[in-house]
Structures are given as structure tokens and as C-alpha cells.
Amino acid sequence: MATEKKTAAKTTKTAAKTTTKKATTKTAKAEETKAVEATAVAEAPAKKAPAKKTTTKKTTTKKTAAKVEMFIEFGGVQVSVDEIIENVKKVNGKDAKSYTIYLKPEDSKAYFVADGEEKEMDVFFA
Image (tube, rainbow, N blue to C red):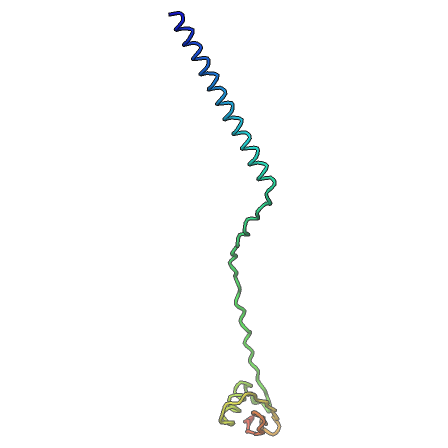
């Protein structure tokens, strides 16, 4: 029996040594692998992460043009410039690309050029 105990103890010691050697070898290999990976990571060029697209909500205030009303007074009578322009377009009879209007209140006339054609109309200041 003593021999069996000695053999069993030797077997246990041998097994423990083998297990310790395996564990030490595994630990050493794991540490070596970590060291190699760390070196590779350190040597590898740093990859830049794609820039995040930030979307900012643009709040634009809608600017409205100030409404301008213009009147011409002569002899105590007031006539709107918009009214004169509308009447010039009616007198012309057709759409024009451009109008140039000359107003002469003392004669109660509006002279205008519509696409190169000269015309006139009466403006009533009476």
C-alpha cells in the first residue's frame, strides 16, 4: 500500500507540474499574444472615424418686403402710382417686357415707352 500511495503522490505531483506548466505556457502565450496585438495596434496607422454629419435645423425668418404706396398730388388731387401703372398697361393693350413712364402733372399726361414704342395717356388731376 505504501508503494501505491507513493506512486499516487508522484502521479499527482507530476500531473500538478504538468498542469502548472500548461497553465504557465498558456499564460505566457496569452501575454505574448496581447503584447503582439498591442504592438500591432500601436504601429497601425490610426483610422479616422468618419465625421458625424450634424444636422442643424435652420430657422430662417421670412422677410417680407415692406409695402410701399406712392401717390402724386397736383392741384389738390391725389393719384396713386399703382393706378397710373395699371392704366398705362391697359392703354398699351398688350404685355410688355419693360415700361418707362414719364409723368407730367401740369399737362395731366403720362408719357410712356413700352418695349420701344412711345405712347401717351391722360392722367386726371382735375
